[in-house]
Length: 269
Image: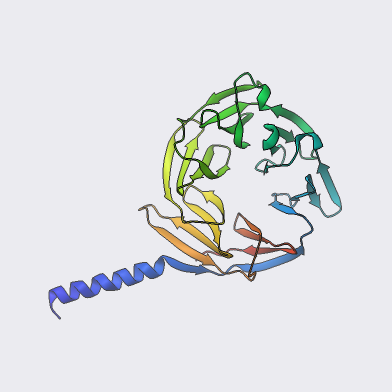
């Protein structure tokens, strides 16, 4: 075999192996099933409580323990932030308002951003650190932080040039994917990083700055970006042929259908 032929063989062999590595399959282990009686099931916390919305009533349930909160004056609940189960955030976008609840769903604070000293129209929100809320203000198209004990607001980002398609927050980071499927993050200090491009999705959940789970056409995938910038896409093989939503937290994958909730343990190779 000539040197050139050998090099050509090695190239195609390595390309074939690399291509195979990019299309993996994960087969999670089914660990439990339960009936789903909620219009919107939101997930679980570390204490074993489940959260749901039914008839615009937000509920926290564990066995026979049931806590409920409703606020008919603020309209429909747009989003719920469950990062801190001791202080949860309910967003009512139609009324430009949020309500903070304690662990028994008692109202701690209600904020109407239309009455803020600084004009704010909120289209994205989440819990941050040090008594602050992440805010995306559509008036200036900037990400900011709202200190709810002092009623103070500050912008931390430059204006965004594209509309937000999806967003997710943790205490220190505001993640978003724009309409062109570009993925970014912004820290509490205003540092913006480009995290790459994501494929078209029906639903998505960001795990961290290099990993996310997404669904497309009733199939579920996990995408993990390595340090060199390459991405390994794995299809997650679940029993459900169709599903409404999913939640992936600490290697537990919950699949929500209209009838039941299936919980899987993800075992990565």
